[in-house]
Image (cartoon, rainbow, N blue to C red; front, side, top):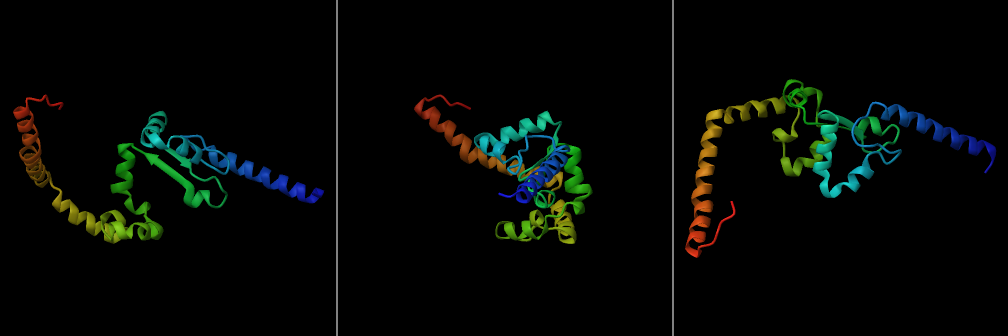
Length: 175
């Protein structure tokens, strides 16, 4: 390998490391590795991923941003992930400034077969219309009535037969 090639490779590596240190400076949460991002942590904790994410949220005060794949030009557009459980952030994202967080055509096409064009897969005016329609259906009174019917049916058709069978067979029931 000649000197100019080695110098170009070293320059590219140095530029990448400078970029990587710049992008990871603002990231909290799980450790971000060069090129691999936070994928090693996700893979390592795959069997308890939700608990691991909850631990990261607790350690970071309810919100953190991480990078799934630390590759220049790709990371800023697609690989930066914000994870939050802060009620103020959720209200901001889901209600107050919903238009700032579009799902975009990639998400919509990926989930179209499952979600169609409903409230969970729409943006803009379509989403506003769907939300207003859903808000009419989800009043406190209608939710209370629906839950009451569901609980009554669950008790009558699922819980009572279990208790009756246990009583006939004189078996204890672990609630």
